[in-house]
Length: 388
Image (cartoon, rainbow, N blue to C red; front, side):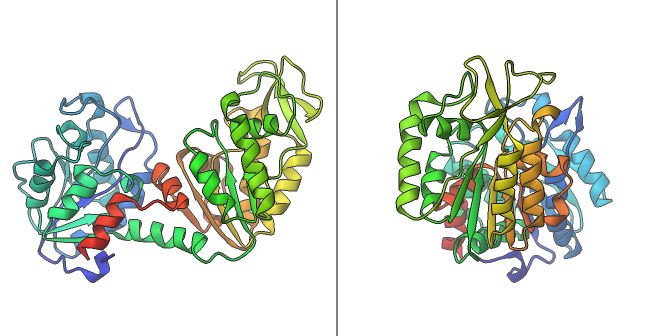
């Protein structure tokens, strides 16, 4: 891919697609991590004397129907604060934008435009006509073939990958293409559904595959354990059993918990009971792994040459059930090998356990991160390569 470093943007009209899909509470940005990640790219364009237009989606409004609750107005205010220059929000922009050299404007939510999700060719062409150079810097949306992510690349005069997107791809390639061994992947979260292809792909690549959360419960059921009322996917138990067997045949390992923390209800105030994995009661649910399991898994992670982490190990939002995810977070931070983490819940855990500065690369992407790990070709990356 051609990168921003290889592209002349001085005194040009530059359109940058970033990921500013951030949480808004009572009209204010409640977490600005994604905005901060995009600031260096925007600042670089401003410093080059470019006339800068920034576009992003926010939330899931009904396409073609502007909705104040999904407006990027609070994001424009936060960008103004972080950049130290006034960033005006432009609401009607698709037919032309007034922007001067050294100025930055934020274009209102791309999902307010009909045809964005369907990758409407006429809409993508209009976006491309706004600029001399299009910069794709939203890796988190690179897996979606939409007008503002893929279509515009095909029509723009000059296109390139922004530094944030390029860094994400470099980090993933370092972890997947020729990783230092052993390669350990941690895949947590509620459901196998949506991560099944990732698990199948990782079994062919990793030395150890650690599963957590509801995913681990499904694997425990597949291994013949009684898991009470624990969240799991009964229809995928047989699939999990096949994955365990596939891993065994390939010399990989899927270590399952030997002890767990259970409760009789899913509640912030629920009392945690430590159980051997063979002794879970019929009316209990698994909400975290126990200290013995946490110690074993942490040891595996600390000795890895490369770690890929996506998803929590337990219900870490509940204080009584955060210790498993905390142990993994600290182990990833202590690992001397290359460590890569991605996904919203993973980032939340990293922030909670204060290990951000000790992980080599943190991806802001969720779905795109997982699809890249699977080995899928992401539409925006394909378009960038073809345009180069």
